[in-house]
Image (cartoon, rainbow, N blue to C red):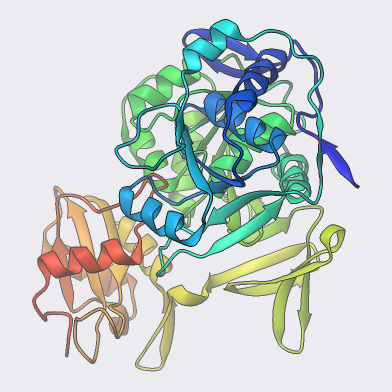
Length: 451
């Protein structure tokens, strides 16, 4: 496995991306990428900030053709850019829209001009499997983001195996509509690598609101795959928007409750599958949430336990990747997730996960959004921290909420402090970073979370 195709399977007339203005074939996508590659600066590292998915894909292809490594930051702001630029000499930004920050050598390309100028460029080249294709950053939901380098071979392996893990191979020429950014590993694998290596197509937009999701789905022919998050899925289920037929729904980035999965299957008339993963490995396992609590691993991963440690074995790349979470290994191909390791709390000798507590709260009528939070020692909230619940609710008061939590939870986990807010500071993937939680606490708490 020395080199792998940039596009595989390559069929010049196969549609790669769709949108309101028409379709982009694989041949056209590669032709545009080749034009862009010729104009890129001779630098080793590039941040791909492109917003349209077709532009993101062709920018990635152009960078690979120039032997560059693409960085996928967790957000699009000046602070993150400054941090990355300071840590990575020779870095430049590549975007399809103007940036309010950046440095000399940044490239903002005109996607429309590339579409007009693109011509048949022949068959795409091969890329060395060992080439460091991407540096992916964690979301920072538990602290400072960390970087994980992915070779082209690793990215291709995900593009080939993830559709099989989700049992999508029976769908003929599906089109993905995704509500998550391409820079996030989940969005990258399902809406970019699934196009470059899985034979699927994707919509060029990233819709968030129910009406926009419905429009993008309508602009794509059947079969349609909706790639989303529990936050976006809940809003879609509760909306009254008319939706075209969907063949499969995929959810990730946060735990999906069985109740929401059942409501989603009823509303959309499609199976809802959930992905378990983490940045170090990418998408690890999949399951139909209403059918089982066990996760089936990708065909190229094996679950192992040795000397009390649990890890993923990736034989093709000779890697062992420790699970960052508490899992039960059912067999080498199946795991049962017990909770995120950094999400587990121990109060009065009893253990629970913050995600599990949050999921219980979100099932209460009248709760639109919410999150459980345990201040860390360095949060500035005091020496002895207590659970706090931040809640968005239009028809549920504190007394009613507290009574429902008392009924559903062990008394040790009923939060001492409940804070009602207008909205939670979720990012584009529906997550809330630890820094955002500390900022939220600083706005609304004045020592109430302490003993």
